[in-house]
Length: 297
Ligand SMILES: [Zn+2]
Image: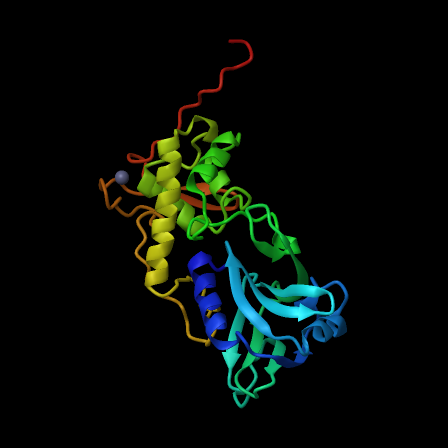
């Protein structure tokens, strides 16, 4: 899965290359790529042809293209990148990619938009824009997604309060996209390392200062990744022009098992977490003590 900085790189590319262009033709090469568009591939194409892309937007790791008012009002093309989905802007003369699923041509005969997806977990779908929980207009299926820490309208204090109201562990709260969005496994581990918190810390015992520290750290590490040009471990994932966004990101904890903690030198530990791993420093980020009293005590 791409992380937020990669999605932002794609969004910027789309804003630069497809905004203010009018769609003239849509070809769906694989029905799975539009399976989230429940009215089917013909309806998907009908809703796009003749429309102009007005903006490329993102919330958390979700990306969409806003379209000018159609017959039913403003709506948007929501992109699900899945595990291997790519939004490519390609010269029409360029040979088709092996896993090209959707082609969008524009009235100016300029570069076309191609959705390429080897594993077909991703896809595109058209949805009305609705008022979202955290403000703004979002495609209906993602209206519950909270703002991310890099969003100019992100409310840090409200997000901290939302996390402290939860009855869960801090890492689970960071990955839950409804209080704060856009934080995946990599940046959760990095933010927790910076804030010196173990991911199993109970959210209801977190201080406001700890909550602010971990969310500020998440914004900082994602911002640093974005400055470096977007990052991904997955070679399948490339940005809007087909250039790999891969770079050797500097990670302090994630994926660093048995390497010395950059702060104290203690070997980083890996613990099982939701079918994946959590990486932390045993010394800087001690596991919380079991504090819940047994019913008999
Ligand atoms: Zn350490």
